[in-house]
Length: 215
Image (cartoon, rainbow, N blue to C red):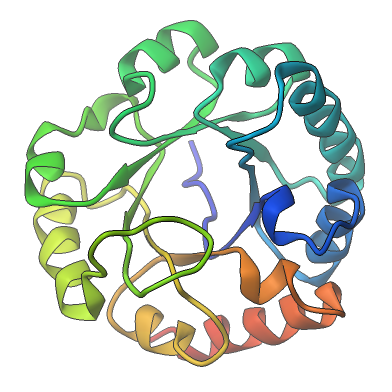
């Protein structure tokens, strides 16, 4: 199985979209080089989320990039999304794997060392460590910084070297290179892409920064 490409991980959230249709934003970011997408909606009702997920999937089909749903395994199942991303208070990753099957992409958020030790590595396709920097898009009580990211990533990688490890929270064009140079396989980004007036251009520029920072 090929590793999941999380190099430019675009997170779609209606709260950080300037009111624009998420499917349109997804198509622009995919055209600009985003490699994987997550749809996150903490306030939407189930029918709205399902409609949005289906529209995003349709928009992404020509680009052959996957869509994951944040937390909601039921939305992923009903919409035909390629997988889910779960946090520490969401459905356990093992249960998500059992429901979604062996071909689904399943990612996990890691915030502290206990999460590293408890991570169900056998069911994961990638992990994201964070929050790395302060962000307006989510309540992160403590940004861990680059050093904190490395402290989590190193023991995690020692247990499963082939599993992609990304970074999340507060990452934009000004600091993405630093994160990649620190060893991240990819960066998860919301506002730097989807609060931009020109989403495609913002994605292209960030993709160039990421590729330029690789060893």
